[in-house]
Image (cartoon, rainbow, N blue to C red; front, side, top):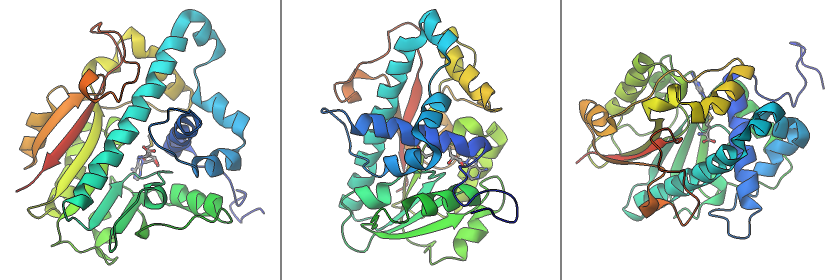
Length: 292
Ligand SMILES: C[S@@+](CC[C@H](N)C(=O)[O-])C[C@H]1O[C@@H](n2cnc3c(N)ncnc32)[C@H](O)[C@@H]1O
């Protein structure tokens, strides 16, 4: 069905929103593995909605790049993203086990944790993302018998604008300890935008709140091993805009205690293939932070 803007009812997200489809595609691949680290059965709703072949083409390195030998980097990246997903699943379940009942997923994209995680009763979960991404998500999930296992609220926002005001207009409770998740967003914003985003999160985080996030290590912005990923983004008109080399200092500056490690840490790799030990290997930080 055509809309008055000429987009069809199931037009996929454009621009930065396309990265959300890439992530759904990765979760689909992981969910099909017999040794999967999680099961995202709804990921297929999104890849189906855009046409699987299109998604695969958008998500994988170009054929010339594959010929140049980046297949290994691609497979390592898939594993890294699966590890990251499971790491944040565990973080959120640990937070609710610890008594937190309010969760905010920043830049939620096509994340289906509201549906697939075994939430205890009375969990309220807010998903923040661009309006067109959340709109696509609703439409793609319609008819899929997708029932949240928590009290889910989608909050369309621009995270570089006054999103706290929009969140405040919902039944979000600012004085209640909250578990925040910022996955797959910091690399796409500038340092100044990330600091503003963290300031906004901080103002809404009383003692007892937690935050988990992911960010790139700075060599990813120029290393040869990550060139295929940067080229893939560039083909979509996108670029990584920032990275961090001391995430704990950064978090401390924003009033959080934290622990961080590289996604390639064997201790938390869930038994998956890890990138080579070369300094150039693709790496991202997994960060857990808290306020007491
Ligand atoms: C790489 S995806 C990650 C999505 C999800 N967290 C996941 O891991 O599957 C990046 C997400 O950030 C969202 N995003 C980027 N810039 C944004 C902005 N200024 N305001 C709101 N959302 C934004 C995109 O729409 C997209 O859904």
